[in-house]
Amino acid sequence: MHRVYLDNNATTPVLPEVFEAMRPFFGEEFGNASSIHHHGQQTRAAVEDARESVAALLGCRAPEIVFTSGGTEADNLAIAGLVGAGDHVITSSIEHHAVLLACRHLQEIGAKVTILPVDGRSLIDPADVRRALRPNTKLISVMMANNETGVLQPVEEIGHIAAEADVYFHTDAVQAAGKVPIDVKRIGCHALSISGHKIHAPQGVGALYVRKGIHIRPLFYGGRHERSRRAGTENVPGIVGLGKAAALAKRWLDCGDDKKMAATRDYLQQGLLAQVEDAAVNGDDAARVPNTTNISFDYIDGEALVIALDLKGVAVSTGAACSSGAIEPSHVLLAMGLRPDQARASIRFSLGKQTVTEDIDLALKLVPEVVARLRDLSPVYRKAALRS
Image 1 (tube, helix red, strand yellow):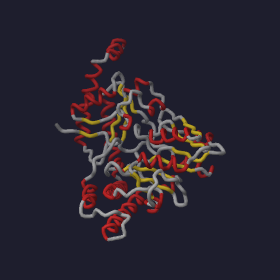
Image 2: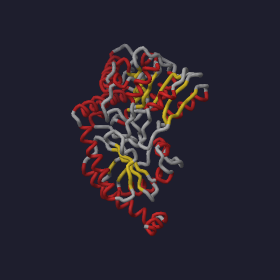
Image 3: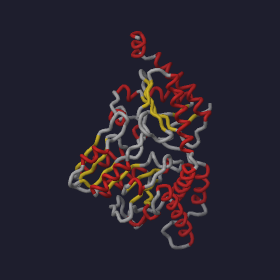
Image 4: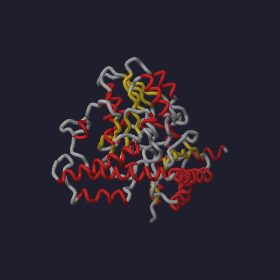
């Protein structure tokens, strides 16, 4: 069976070039990057080369990059590292749980948190951010791109508001990095999170940009690694993989391949809407990352569609992989104003650099067939069909 993988927002396959860059660091180049002898200095050089590549992707200086175990740790480090008891944080209702639950923890230790709504396009209103500011506001944390809809938030406007108010601004760019150009200076953020496995690097590695001069409290204690911002022996193979993936992503963006991916995504989206009645794109009227579309298919259960498509060889998802198995519908889609049944009937399709036209053509053949079969089994759909 030919398998089609359209769940790249959950994780991406490691590109061959990335794997080859990592390979030596599982064997002959095994040194601890903190050691001063030859073996350690070999791996230290590789770590610093990777730091330069990640910095180039984000438009910052290499010393401003802190390597982490992934996007969740990067988000937690930014939020817990900048905020304490008595401080006030502003965030949005569609953030990843790595941000929302970190903010909940802050509330438990005495911080105040304001969670702002979004509109039907999944967009936060910068005016709401401005209105939410208080004298004790310490941090604004708003994601750059939503993991479920792909919608891009107005982070530059929010950065200007943060600068005017003299508060920190963190953005979770896990789903934006490598898909759209990022320049931390233009955004005006003080911290920005990315994750390796979303850009064809391995799982278990990520990075946090921390603007020069910003003191951030570490989450871990034990060593002076990462300029005392993240203790622990560096994951050299993972860091090397992230560096290579960042370099490939920058080259991909510089060549305009993001526009080609957006065209492929639109081909999939338009083909599905043309074939399937009672379907709609969530966040269609907003700017999105080029690889993501989230479509609601009325009268079906999204998880049933995911399972049925998987049996046919097509991998998609109902939303965030971290929430798999959750009984509740997507908090992102509910925040946009969808009814619970609409949220449960929504499917995320996310492309990767390995996606080819043949994959999309197969999805365009199978998805309408499976949707039709599931609707035939739905008593709600049969009632609606009789009424019409």
